[in-house]
View (cartoon, rainbow, N blue to C red):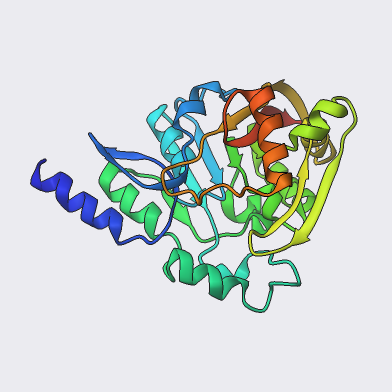
Length: 272
């Protein structure tokens, strides 16, 4: 192994928790919780070549770097820099940010910065909440992507409307979906409410619910994938073995043929 690769491995190890699995150099990968690389080609991407693009809720930056790799002229990535500013449910609000900082490290965005330097990236990361997107300060974007953020927001409709305000072209939305209600109610928009616990999960739609949320925020649906799994990365916690988890896993294997986060991706554009 080269000296540069070994130094990069040591730098990667200084980040306590990686959300995304990424190859930052030949044979050098981040130990992410989720590995989006196998599904990146399945997303209904618009052409980003020469476009001004935005990645909402970037975390370690996988989708932002993917747009850059695909030839985007400019990529802006936004995320909040303080764990306490998450939309924590009331039952964990007092200590949710503090506990997450113990797990992920106090320096939010460190993984992005390590990846940014290793990839020689020009992505512009800004500490902005999705709720605060404003065309007056941000301008308009030709392509916007947002992956796996809405379930962590108390007000996802407000967030989607904010995205709509700065979207001048296409919006690619990839989100976790509820497989059971997608199967049992394929045409009825449904949301499963949680709003509790340290995972900061508020609500998860079925596939029809995901698409209705986009419609309600002012978007027109252009394409939608079939449900697909986002594989767990090497650092993801071991699965639970309670009855509910085992049942959910059996349904997922039957529908998706493998474990992972049940997902749907939708390409949309603002309605005039």
